[in-house]
Length: 224
Image (cartoon, rainbow, N blue to C red; front, top):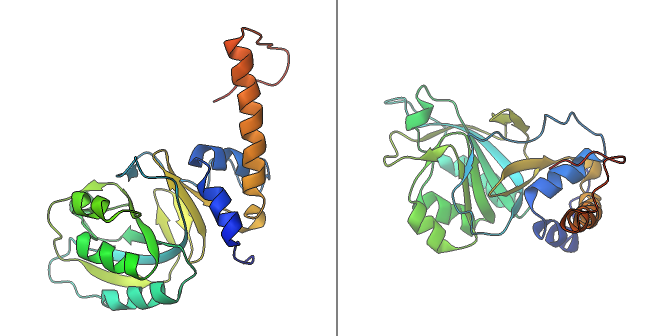
């Protein structure tokens, strides 16, 4: 695990949109291009908020098994309290009915924010969207919203989890916005912002050429 990024490095990453972060990561060739990000089954609930950046705190959860007992959410809060900040709580659903699952709402989100979290990422459901949005500075990335919490339990904390095909370990650096969530690899985390700014500069030049009808198809292929 690389050293935690400085305040200045984290601030630089927060100023960049997630697709540009993803493009920047590709330049380091540290993983396949189809790895390290969630699919479109994970939605950003508060798209008006700026990009969310934080170190993962992982757990597995179940809210759709009637009568099931777990280890208690205090175990998760203890892990979150001692985790690097800012943190993103990553909750993998392991119940039998994911589309009806609900793993957090206003009370849990408020508790997590008090302990240094800036958002939740889950492949299940969340609720109390209006109230959590009003808190400010806390993002929901989830499969959707569900009205009832069912029987919410925490099954395990600190394990590697998988959210929409993206493997996440405790301490992984995650970046997300309206477009989705991407994992910033340790190998290049301290260089991604600089690479992203270079990409912005190239894209600005490409857009200038398009606007001026000066497109040349003899060089690099134009992609989104």
